[in-house]
Image (cartoon, rainbow, N blue to C red; front, side):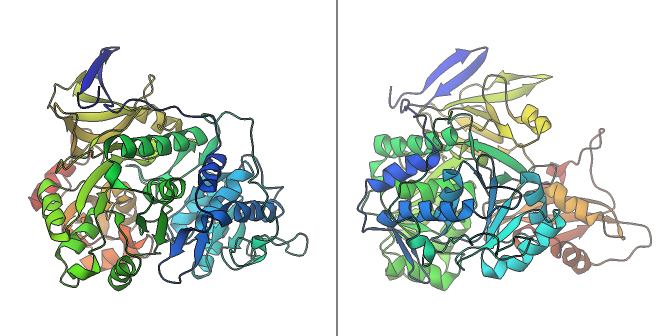
Length: 560
C-alpha cells in the first residue's frame, strides 16, 4: 500500500518492497520501444537542441535518421557486416547525433558501448579491446586519441567521425570498397531511407539480449563492462516514468524543458536524462561540458525548468557569486544524483535557488535508477521505485544478518533493471550478484519507517569526483611504476567543488628523491583529468591489515 513500508521475510532475508507497486515490462527491443514512444509526440517539436550551436533534432526526424544511419553502418564492415552481436563504441561528448548513432547500432542487432571522451588513449584502448568493439565512433577533436587507442588495442576496429559525414580510414577500412556510412544529421542520412521504419530485430528475448555495455570502475582498477539487456533498460524507463506519475507528477511535465549537461556516455545521462526525455516528450537542451558562462546562458535562453545535476553543480548554482537570480528563475526542479547530497546542503540549495531539490539513487549495474524522492525528504535518496526490492545486510562472521529497522547495512537490491552480470568477469559476478537476484551495491544505507533510503557510506573503495568513479587501485598501480615510489595508497579527500578528490599517500624508496609535483605529473600523463591526483602526502608507511589490505579509513581520518 502506498505510504506504508512493507517488509517481507524471504529465505531468511527481510526485503523491502516498493510502496509504488509494480510495472509490466514488454518483450520489446529498446530501439522499438523508444521509436514507438517518440512517434507519439508532436513530430515538429524539438527533441534535442544543442545549447551551443542551436542544432536541433525533432521527434519526427528521429526514426528516419536512425534508419538511414543503420543502413550506412551496415555497409561499413571491418571483418564482416555490422549485425547481431557487433559492438559499436561511441567516444564522444553530448551531441544531437548521439541517440541516432546509438539506435542505429541497436536497430541492426548490435550492442553499444560508451566511453568517457576525457579518456587517454591508454584508458580507451582497454575498453576497445575488452568490449571487442568492431567500430568506434568519435568526433573530430578526439580522432587522434581514438586512432592511437585502436592501435594499442590491436588495430582491428573501424574508426568513424560523428557529424563529418563518413568513416575516416584510420584503421584499414577501404572507403572505395563500400559506400561510406553517414551519421550526420545534415548529410545523406537525412534522405537515404526517407521515412522507413526503424529496423526490428524481433523476435527475440529482451531479458537476455544485450543492448548496452557501459563501463563501471571497480576497486581492482580497470573498468568492467556492465551488460545491460534491452529488458533491463526498457524496464527502468517504465519504472521511472511510473514513479514520476504515481509519486511526484510535478517532477516533470511534457511542457518542461530539460537540461542535458551530464554526459551521455554515463548511465545517468544516457538513460535517466536522454532517453527519459525522449519517451516522455520533453525538449532536451544539451551541452558538451560544463562551462559556467554557457551553462547559465543556456538555462536562461532556453528557459530550462528541470535540471538533472550532480552535487558540485548544485553547489555552484547555490553559492557562486556569478549566479544571479534572473539567470535561473526558470528552474523549478533539480534532481541530484551520482553522489549523495547531504541534508544541510540540499536544504540550503533549495532555498537559495528557489527550486525543489530532490535526490535519486542508482548505479550502472541497475540501468540505473533504484530510488527517487517522492517529497522534500532532505538528506534522503528517496524511496524504491516500482518493481524494486531492497535488503540491508550486516556482515556476521562468514555470513550476513538482516539489519534492524533504522540500522545501517549494505544495500542489496533486486528488480528487472538489475544487470545479468559483467562482461567476461565471473569473479566480479560472484562477488556482486546473489543466486536469488540481488545486486550488492557496495553502499551502506539505512531505511526509516516511511521507506526513505539514506546512503551513509560506501563499502566500495571508489572515489567519486563530480559523480564520476575513480578506482584507487588504478592510481596506486601507476604510482608504483615511478622509480622513487616504494608503496602508495590513494583515498578520496572531501572537496567542496568536486565532492571528493584523489589524495595519494606515498612511501619513497630509501635515498630516493621525488616531489609531489613529480608524482602528480607522472600520473597525469596516463589518466583522464578527473582521475588525476590532486594532493600527495609523504608517509613512512601505509597502514595495512594483517592480510595486507590497505586501511583506507585510517588515512581518511586525517581529513576529519
